[in-house]
Length: 272
Ligand code: HXC
Ligand code: NAP
Image 1 (cartoon, rainbow, N blue to C red):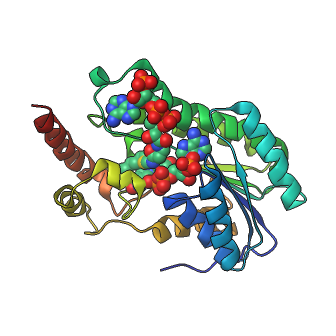
Image 2 (tube, rainbow, N blue to C red):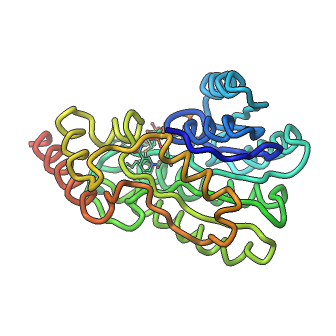
Image 3 (cartoon, helix red, strand yellow):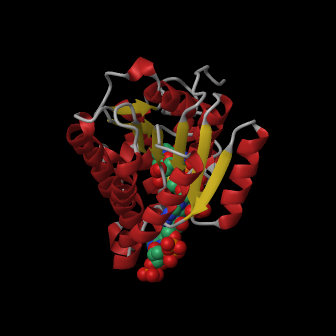
């Protein structure tokens, strides 16, 4: 269920905001009255997301870029700031890639693709955003994952990249805090009906195992993450910066490790 916030007159840019969790965040801000922009690689996904956000009543805009291409990211921010006609009040950076594979089974390019999207992409987005962020007052939210602080088999690329994302969050909270910019990470738990879960728990049996390992007894919804983003972007969080916030029903206390060990066993048995 969606919480209630008021973001009327605010401009919100969600990078990677065209599907799954991040589109859920975009929908949340659209419902709460913000002007919303989204970006990702595929034009058709951008167009569909913008159309959906407009249907929710938001002024919405989309740009297409790959976060691995720093120049394209800079150009995208220029276009988005033109659409906003001013600065960016809320920035969500959530573009990511993931597939389960052991280090021995990944080429340099396989590792590079995830590290470049998740970590280098975050740096590109943070750097390109800086000149447009509302100073003081902007809220920057990076979308992390439990892999950032829990080692998981078949996830070394994501674990390494998302750990870097959280350290970038904490460092930028220090570097930008003096100008009144808050920087935080949200760590989603297992979120139902998302690409991430279809990759990491691809069978109904694995999905059930994941649900059993969540202390609150259910997988999360995209609205759960949107609500946390709304809270972090709101005045209620005006003294919160540098925080790494799990929104995961308690999963990262221990269940995540257990569920991912089951996935690793399943994948290893498939290899035999
Ligand atoms: C080993 C693999 C592989 C696999 C791809 N590769 N899948 N290697 N095992 N299962 C290798 C390829 O062979 C290639 O290496 C390299 O990775 C790059 O693959 P491309 O397909 O050329 O890359 P690209 O088109 O850039 O796509 C990037 C991607 C893709 C990450 C591989 O899956 C993607 O676009 N993902 C975006 C959507 C996504 O992943 N969403 C889920 C996010 S969930 P070679 O050597 O052959 O060139 C998440 C956390 C979830 O992030 C946490 C849940 C708890
Ligand atoms: P998703 O639907 O695949 O979302 C990824 C988004 O990023 C899409 O809009 C995608 O669109 C875009 N994207 C991917 N690569 C990109 C690139 N190189 N440049 C620009 N945009 C790119 O996945 P999701 O499962 O909802 O995950 C969303 C976020 O939540 C990710 O940061 C993920 O790590 C995190 N997370 C997810 C879960 C979960 O349960 N699903 C758990 C923990 C953390 P295009 O394909 O058009 O580029």
